[in-house]
Length: 625
Image 1 (cartoon, rainbow, N blue to C red):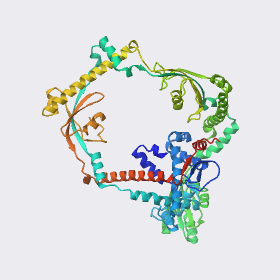
Image 2 (cartoon, helix red, strand yellow):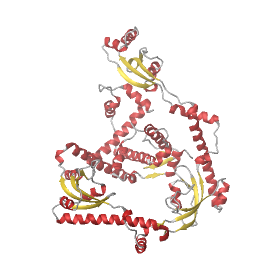
Image 3 (cartoon, one colour):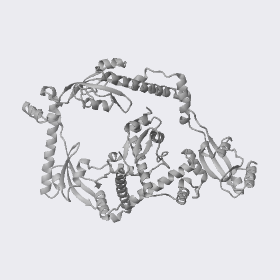
Image 4 (cartoon, rainbow, N blue to C red):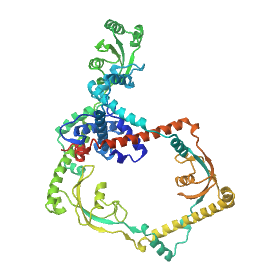
């Protein structure tokens, strides 16, 4: 659920806006009535189909590819949690739709009309409704006008609910004041650094000191638990190497892919729109006589509309057909539509680009081989399951599916061997490693599937428990850690001595000077923001904001111990920075609103029970039956 994923305030705000982004500008259809066939979820007696989720994820992947590159796929979307978010968004949308019906909420025709006409996406630069832009949007989103209005009606109704929840959220002024001052208070400190010494300058510890240190710090010298494992691992990438798809199949896939991978021709167009056919014809005749399009337009007291670079499908069918037949600087005959007579000028042609068969051949061959491999592995996993169920050993079961058995000795929880190196050939799937260390000795796991479509089964053969290494094996390590501890202890003692002297003396600056230390003054820092070149490390920052004026504090850093004294506390005045105050109010309001909506959606699951079929979700993404 999104509730589990909204572990931070930022994620909760994101969740809130995901709830509000229902379909009109985002991704396809998200609210429908009951459907038949396989379903991924049931909400209050209605069903959400596998097709709905599949379409949503396809659209999501398309959007992500435009942002992240062409290799982004549904598998990566699953790994990033985007598929789970999509399922939750579908469920939440359905919950709001059902409750809106129960409350009798509806959006009138006038409100819908006003919403469309006021939408900036459908307006000219002058702020007037542009029906051409509206129709272009419908074509781009593959929506009919009726379907769009239906989606818009549902969105408006659902926003009525969420806006009501938002407006009911109250932010006490005192809370804003407290948080503003907490976030924006700044402090200046005087800081003395006492560096660590060089461990190599220290005399090596005695044998007695080594023995004592070894016993007192066993966690630093204990070998981790190791496990011996036998496994069968079916990897689609490896299995795919056995297959070479037919050229005919590669060609078919190329024909299917080339359209989505092609860059369509675009044309830079400008238009004049006439309400009178005779004027349109007169303009066309004059513009063809050698005068420039814009010059002729001025004679007719008209300003052309610059459409920018458009694809053919961005235009109404008749207009696009005519405009895309012309060469550069060509002018169309007047074209009649419901809006009037259009005359378009082709300012520039940006050629399209279709990828060649050779450029996609290797990619398609690999993808098809993996598809074949996945199908084969699914069948093999079923056969493997039956074989193991009959009591066969892993070795015998491996032979039935024509694969080799894998054996790994002394694997720790990070996948490394006793020498600290990654175990050779160990599958990199986190699930594989997890199963190694959650399966009891002597037991065999069920057949497991990874997020990459790999299948495996393993048996834990032996377990070597954690064991304190003998001193002879870690003597050099003990000496190194002992010396590091010593130089840290010396620096810490010096820092504590200076702190004590500064507390009882006049100031840290005076005591530092008397002991030969240099002192520096930091730039103002807040709890959450500090300058890039700040002398205040994170380890000191928290302690500084727990201290009072003139307090002297000590903190460790990577380079030594720091002794600091609060020189100045700069209070934050809420009335002096309206922009920051308003920003904080907005953030807090969004957080409170997000939490209110989240609680409301959670409460809706009682009158409208929700059941999600996780297996069906996986099948919808992978396309497997």
